[in-house]
Image (cartoon, rainbow, N blue to C red):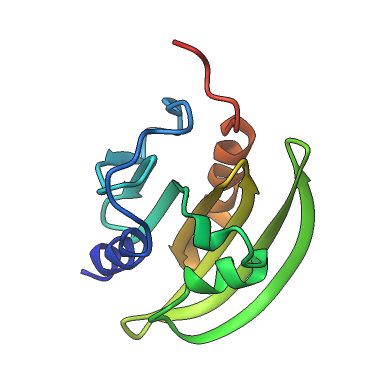
Amino acid sequence: MRLFLLILLISASFGCGKRKLVDPIRTLGPEWMPVQIKDAEQAWIVPGEGSSLLIDSQCKKRDQDIPLNALTAQLLIGMTDQTLVEQKAVTFQDREALLSTFSLKIDGAKQMMRILVLKKEGCVFDVVLSTPDTAFDKRLPDFDKVVAMFSLEPSKK
């Protein structure tokens, strides 16, 4: 139930009816099950563990002047006991990006989140890993793998 709530919270933050802006990532690992979330580029869960991983984009004019830290904060709406563990500006595919790690609670359960947020050509992109605090170190390499495979330049198929 907590995972479903998290996925709903994240997906509710974004607009409706958009074209896919990133190429699909097909190899994540046998534990991860792909799931369809309205308006998300791609999403996965680890059944029974409570971990989720999401790639999303939105192209709204109103978001273009919002700083990356505020865009990150929008993803945390509804989550309690938020503690920023680490946050740093990084360069991602020649773009300024913000990489953040939070400790927080979702529906009373301790979670960790790693979030990468960036902008490109009028769109905001984010990659979000949410795990129970006990699974964070185990799932962090999966987040890094998705980030490494994620391209802002979709192929012309």
